[in-house]
Image 1 (cartoon, one colour):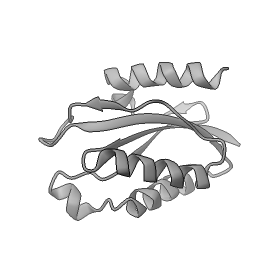
Image 2 (cartoon, one colour; image 1 turned 30 degrees about the vertical axis):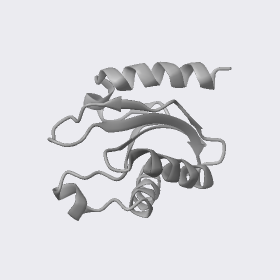
Image 3 (tube, helix red, strand yellow; image 1 turned 120 degrees about the vertical axis):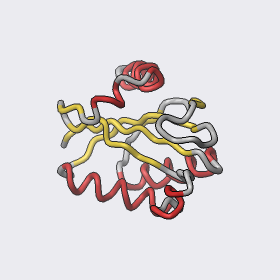
Image 4 (cartoon, one colour; image 1 turned 135 degrees about the vertical axis):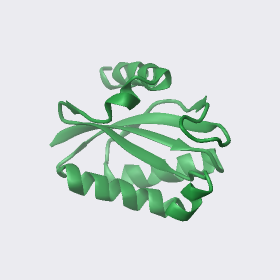
Length: 126
């Protein structure tokens, strides 16, 4: 089993999508924990603000299978390449850490990721 750290984001029907994604993630990764949601300005696209949160879970899946499962959950939330071309992100789930390996180094530099990760560390060490 490896610990994973995820970052979720949505800029359309954000709370509806966030709740749906949380339910699907709970099914896929029993015991997953989530931070609170935070509104953030979009990075790299001109769009509505995003709602973001982070999560931590354990999984027996390797990197590729974990990524595939996360992509399936994004699609179940209605996300699609067509919508992304229109700057609509129904659900984006980024795998930021698998085991001890940190992924997406630029994402870790974002202030909201740093803040939410501190919260995630606090709630997972209780």
